[in-house]
Length: 485
Image (cartoon, rainbow, N blue to C red; front, side, top):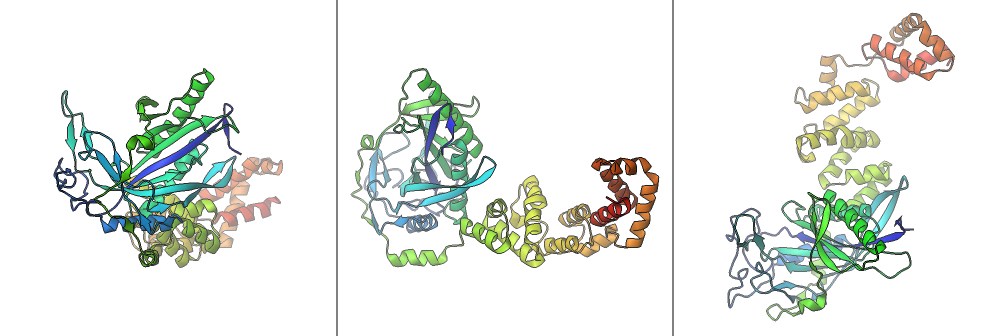
């Protein structure tokens, strides 16, 4: 059942442009590196000079095959390139080479999890297609008074445009879908996913309707380049459309932009339909033919996909779905967890440490898990010392700190040097407990009167007297035994 907002059902579809990680452009040998001086990476093909002809980049096709396999799509054995005609200053040819009637990747789905009513719910978004196309150039307005500059470095950069069915029903679902797709394209190595540089750009088609009614008129929010802005933009657009309808206005189909400074969307132009682009097959490019052998060779080289790895972590290590999904953000994180889990024999503890202290440090230092300063072997040894009662959780954090900062490389050496070993001498601990009970008659009386806070205070006094070396479980057991609780 879809969640209703003011009696309206929200309907969202996505179009995502993923820039492919190729050395050269889709139809020319010009480089695709980001940040070069304007117009230094534009060849005769990109500039649309007379007589320059496009030649298909094989690696871009390989990327399309990988994506199709990752999404469970049909990979067309024969697809067609078309000319998408429109005029814009940064499009020298006056058309963009894209695919229309027969795209290379057809169908497929993206599944992900969202929280609904305090439950984790699996959602599936169906894909219509993913087609290969070239990017346009870039118009530069800021540096010119009364004029615009044109940088054609990006013209001809290879893209996969991934189009969904209108299957999402909230901004939360839309963001979860975008994050999952982002994870997939970076995981399989077809896109670097850099949203700030425009490598992964999302357009959200948003409409609202009364339940059971036909689809409403959609407005397309262009070029959403962060997940936070994506949610803000969709939420604003939903509210705006409902207000318009409630006030008796009709929604006009349009392309809009989101302004992060105001938190509002604003209309950019009326939205074109496919007929406006006058698509026709590109006479300069033959049909793209992909053999079954090419597909199977690519399949054999594919890594284990994040969703499959997460399912395996649940099945093999008994992890909750949340843990498994969190640990499969990148292949490196999944590999790190698995190595620590296998070495320690304690997968849940390994999961807690990777999602907790490890991730906290990585975020603080803005580094990937590949650069983690505590190895999987060190983490496994640390978990082992917690598990066998040598150290407490609080002491373990001190050991971790020393390992991360490079003070030592051996877990046991840090425990010894810092005197962190837990007190496992029952006789010595019993003596401390007796002394604490004798010194705190008020807390003892309150506990016997049914006040649990008084018991916690006694535990704290024992831990303080033992300088934190007492085993908390033993302290609890001894105190309750002596107090008859």
